[in-house]
Length: 296
Ligand code: OGA
Ligand code: MN
Image (cartoon, rainbow, N blue to C red; front, side, top):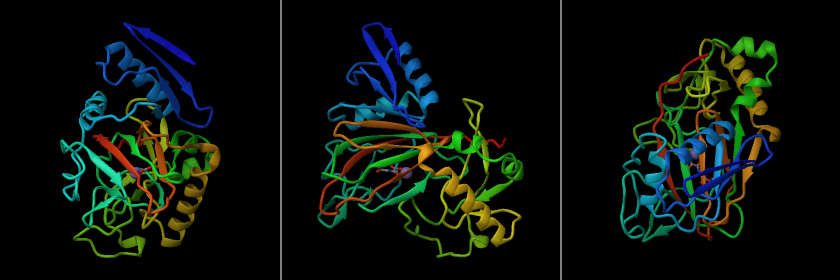
């Protein structure tokens, strides 16, 4: 545990003991962040990849946005917004809602109540996001836990022969579906990965801040290794995915009300358990803009 005392704020960083993740204790979101405290959080984020701030009460959209801005420019939410005005007093374009709640027949947010498979966010664009902040505003009595996986470890533990094989390979990331697996408007249904439309990224990425190598998988569906036969591509991807999602590389966030989680989307993946559709789950989310992917 590291304790940093700066000004009147004292934060402590407590690693989960799993492959990634740490609790940051003692931060007061209602106070401005001092440069020293911000530096400590950045350092902890770089070391632990996912940070949890527990017991934050109910953060307002403004508070979450203001905090997130310290880590980069924020992406605006997609245009399809649902029934937000009836739920939020002040709507902000930087704020996304993740929720299964439906008001007057319209969802207030995305992702519903179903399971979300392992993925990194939006790797189907040239510059996938740097990370996200997710804050629990309302939770179901059970289910809806979020799991994270450490993509540095996934890379580092590959056999040398595999590291060598994938060193110069790129993979196509399917742009036709959103994170919930729903077909986007304007895209046709494709189930032959050789026809997948989307950007290609290297399988091994160099993290722009740590300089360390990590695996970049994105999402499994319709992924395709450029230059490989379909059979070879499927075999390699299946192997990499089952390797990268082993429990020993993961940590489970079991949500409590008031939790705020921030993850580095460049060196982690995540998935979410389903939950009872008749229960309510409401999360506030911000997304920090990314940079071009750099190959190893
Ligand atoms: C996301 C996501 C998981 C969750 O917001 O990108 O995958 O727990 N959410 O809601
Ligand atoms: Mn996601």
